[in-house]
Amino acid sequence: MSLLWAETGTAVPASPKHGAISTRLPPAAFAAMQTISPDHIRWHVRYLSHDLLEGRGTGQRGGDIAAEYIATQFAEYGLKPAGDKGGYLQKVPLVGITTLAATQFTIVPKQGEAVNLKLLDDYVAYDQTQQAESDVDADIVYVGYGIEAPEYNWDDYKGVDVRGKVLLMLVNEPPSDDPAFFKGKALTYYGRWTYKYEEAARKGALGVILIHQTEMASYPWEVVRNSNSGEKSYLKLEGPALKVASWVQLDVAKKIAAITPGMDLDKMMSDARSRDFHAINLTAKLKAHMVSKVRNFESNNVVGILPGSDHNLRDQAVLYTAHYDHLGIRSDMPGDNIYNGAEDNATGCGILMELARAYGTAKERPGRSVLFAAVTAEEQGLLGSEYLGKHPPIAAGKIALDLNYDDVKPLGAAEEVEISGAERTTFYPWVEATAKEFRLNIRPDARPEAGHYYRSDHFSLARVGIPAFSINEGIKFKGHDEAWGTAQYQEFNEKHYHQPSDEYHAEMDFTGDSAMARFGFALGWEAASSSKLVGWQKGDEFEAARKSTLQ
Ligand SMILES: [Zn+2]
Image (cartoon, rainbow, N blue to C red; front, side):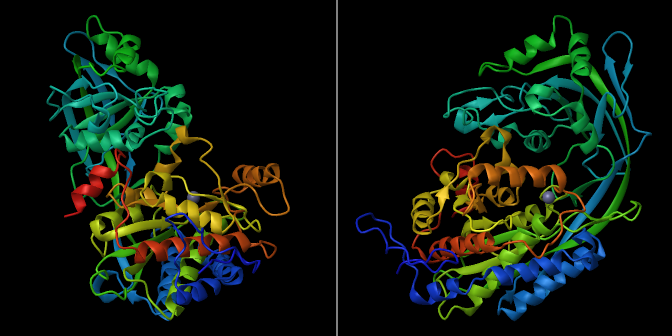
């Protein structure tokens, strides 16, 4: 059975005659897919981004109304509840932490005078143990990049016990052009600052001091400072955490390094690029008194399931995700203070609900079950999806694939698809073949070094081993050239991204959103029907996580 391309109704020639891959959507699935419509998506977007929804803030009334709306749609489409206590909502316990001005940070050399650092100017810090007050008085150990990556034969922690220590480290990863070494120019998760904190906490360290360097972090200190002042949200503590999760300015790091005789930060940084690097005990301590405001609050993921038709496979599933939260309402701000989040991410939710509806109407079911999750707190740092990954309604090792939708622009008939990360999975040949049948060109990630893969909800599922990627449009739309597409994205980023002006307009064209939904429908149906679960390509950084969940 062939697929029809998007909305045009043009028949696409049937499956490739020779290759092993051919589209196998059964007629019932095909018929259900064809009911996916741009207008259905439009009305969801219009509603979710209405001023009355107050920007769907996490832990705010508007966010809760959005969750109830989505749960109601799921019920109407025939999904079974897959949240807590037989309902559609999965409670996500959250904690807001604000570091208060009473916090003190002092570098104490073995000999000589202590140096007091100034909050925000010299350093930023959060107490991830979620206590109102914490004290640290511990030796500082320099651990280079702070990475332990067996697949690249790299270990900055070799031969050193960091329990009870504070670790000074670099952001990013050892530079390389070799794709077989930390993926060359592309950023792996080992380069992200979140990984550095997590790994240090797992190893029993009390604190981390990340060294900020504009060229390595690819953003100036102001960005670190702005995103690390005020309240920061976390999942309620479930595992080991750092009392001090901090960044310092480069100059401060130089001073800390120079305290130890014979040490020089420039040399320490270049030494860290070698496999032979060994951690260095510095002759300085960090004395920190962390004072925080701790606010407990909660929000919900919305989770529904369509049970599969095969007795042996229905305890496995394919997962679709999209975040429903946005930035809420800022009552202290004059003028329009509602962050409607029409494109970011009412569009993804519209697609998610339309997929749920289409699956619900299908006269047949795939063998595996299909899970639909509208997740919360993405804008706070992928927290809702992180919680879902840690508490999946079906074990992570039994989830074949996650397909995520985030900010799918209503710009008309898309002629491309962007699916970065798909090439890392064993499902990729299928993705390529399906794209071809949909007459969608695959647009490669323009800037893999920016690490976008790690900044969207699919990553929360990937890190627990589930093969996962987002589906989005590229930049080429029917009737326009690439420059037009690029200009549309640029204009949105400059004027409307995370602004109250990300609003619904009647002239928005959801043709491409619908095409992305159909494309995802075809992929998901296949992953829910094929004999084998999807895996990661050999040597991928998530392969170990996947293996650990497959018994
Ligand atoms: Zn956003």
